[in-house]
Length: 494
Ligand code: HEM
Image (tube, rainbow, N blue to C red; front, side, top):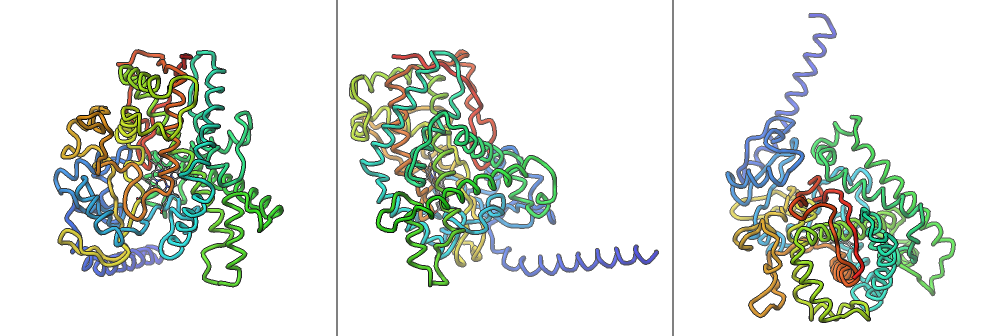
């Protein structure tokens, strides 16, 4: 054997010893974890998981290992929570322990632990509390934002009318309408529908949601150190994020130049005020990097989720025209044609409300929530989960739990209606997740879903280009999100 061969062998032995040592140390802790399929070194349970449809693989594994089990994504163990009972016991009953954010390298590479959604500890608490309070001060959950959505819904109807009943893809017009609401609160202005730079930003958000929901996003999350160096579509995620960051930075700069502490115009101004107040505090959670990422979280979170849900909802209503007709009937009866829908109408429109709930359950657009982690050593169902263990709460398993829904695979608004045809609240309804990390935009999203949905149906009948039986409701890709297949439709004036 020559010198280089000997050196290589020596290095291999050293690396193997190091891995065995590390594995030996963690094994002591990991043997207390719930059971699960046997992992292979480095790749973990990769062979048991279908990267194109993680939820399906997790569902199959739950048949063998039950509602709480361990899988290895690469060399990292994660605890899967499957079914309503397990998710509820963790996120709600032991909410504090399970409130940490788990590893999500595809986003972490960009956020570097700043912002709300991918932060932990005091920083997360401070930023989340501040964001919730500030959104409320700017009218989120109140009449002010309701009026903003109504105004935007009016613009949306005008855009739909311009199609002259010709086929079109609703993706970007919907995200423009939805995004404009959060833009008004965060940046202080809405964008014109013809604004090309706005469309470019929305395309970046849309593309990233798709890429992160694809095999590439999933692989990056499992093997970040390897994928970092490999070519492939996943690299687009990071260049897109950088472009979005530049836009946010530009906006912050504009705000800073015109800043007036006595007259905060929007979320960014309030954050700048807080930054200035805490300038001398080295522990402060409020600095430029957290401002950029918090703004980005609100902009990204506030755009793609609601518009994807609406897009899915329209597709579902075209597949079930009899349900669309019932919504039309209720709108006609409660609102009529001479005024726009308001949030007050919701309590008098249980059928439409039940349809929206059922769209959220059935479309299940964030199937595995965002990953959680336990923030301290935690006893759960007889196991000891060491501090920092990653948790995957499978929301699909809540929404499709046969103990909670009679025929979970069937789209049926009756799931949310009682015998008196009033809206029936279900505990196993968690599209916004549950517990301490529950979606920060829930109240805004629920307002938007109701007002956009009813305004569009008040004005139009949705007509598919193929017969309803041929409409495919299965997602185009499933990962971070369940993304509906692209489609075109016609909107006929009523
Ligand atoms: C239909 C619409 C929406 C759905 C289905 C949705 C769903 C979710 C889910 C499942 C999570 C993860 C919760 C967890 O970690 O357990 C989340 C977190 C979050 N969402 Fe939403 N969301 C929606 C709309 C919005 C809107 C409109 C905003 C912005 C105003 C927003 C901002 C956020 C933020 C900032 C977080 C992180 C919360 C944290 O880590 O503390 N979301 N959302």
